[in-house]
Image (cartoon, rainbow, N blue to C red; front, side, top):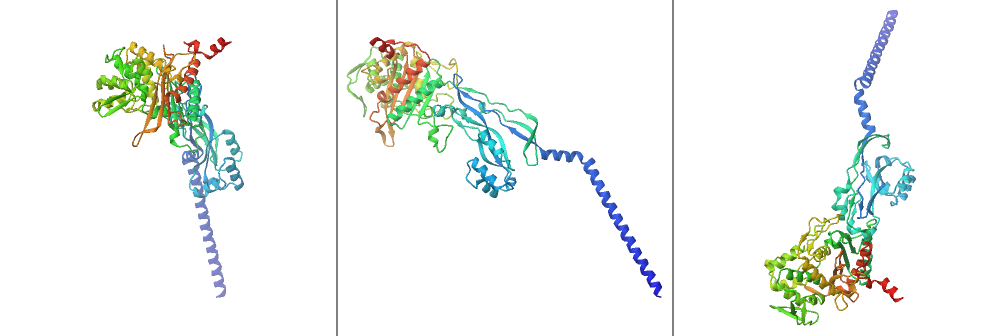
Length: 575
């Protein structure tokens, strides 16, 4: 009995071992088949798919910034140019593994508050892209690169630079951090200047750094250059003189426009106060306005030459007409007054003495529709069409609603509004023998949109009258231009307030042209609220006209037509 049980136990143990061995062999064979099958799948069946997936993780398409077109003046001098810069961004997920001392050093280089990047890492750990510095100079970018921080990346961009600073700031405008035009010509001609962004295919390493350029997918197309009509030499001269005048007269602001009398090109347009477009920190939006083009004011007596020309051209007065002004003129319940009782005046003296009564009498001789038509042709109440963003149209009441007193005040520049540019444009009709020019901020040779408003005879006659304004007993002796004849008209305009016109706030305006016999330039100067004692246009704005006109004519090499008034010649004679 005992031997039988032992043999039986040994046999059962041997069978169990054999079974387990077979199971283990089968399991191992199954695993081997599975592994071989997976290897075949990875290396043969799914090879292309996996390769594509690997390439997708290593190959990337990135944008290539386009060079923004330059803005230049009529002589090719740069007013706005783009320079290459670096923008720095981080992947907070990756940067969290960087050393604290290296992060602090980067913050110091980029002038970031201490701990700012660490704060980004904690608060934006779910993000993979975050700018920490935009448009830094390449030298600074290289210093940050030397830190070799994981999760810090660099992107090439362009930064706009304005060589003339505040001199042309209102006109040229500026771009934002993404290089998109925000103000001025930068905004108005954004599509022309910006160009087209390109793209390229690159290889990145495991840390998403670009290690190789594979191919160019689309070449960036640079923006086109914009050539303005501005002459930077005249622009600077006008800027300097206006700045001095606004400061000397403790004025609120000022604007000045210089036009080519022959084709309407804008050679200068400046404003005060100005700003530096290269550093615009903490500036209010009001500083960005190009007041010479966008802001309006009542032009006052500067429109009186147009009234004389309209009345003459329409045959409503004769060249020999006289007016018994007597200091005041009753129109219904209202009274028009002059500063003094000038007695009886001819046309020339109405302009020379700036008689409100005289031009009111002329205005009432003209039918409202005709009078309104002349003003409308001159561009009052209509945009000047320079193409500048936000350009003002001004206002003028429809003639169907005019009363007699409305006609009277319109004749001496109240009841309508105009920008400095609109007023300068209107003066081309007197400067170019009756032809009104369109205005342009882009360089051009001829004006294809010119129209005749007055006859050549009338325009020359009125210009002759305007020369007397600059005589010693005229209202703008300070406007005379050394070496050149000049013609112009003053305007001293009360500012409108909430309760009518104020008695202490004025616009001081002067509009003129030179040389008077064959004008080459037109200049309008407007100074807002001079408060240093003088407020008359002939004393505040006329001197600015004189200095800018004299300098601009010499810059353009216009021959003097009154050499006996040139200071150099007078000095030589005295010797």
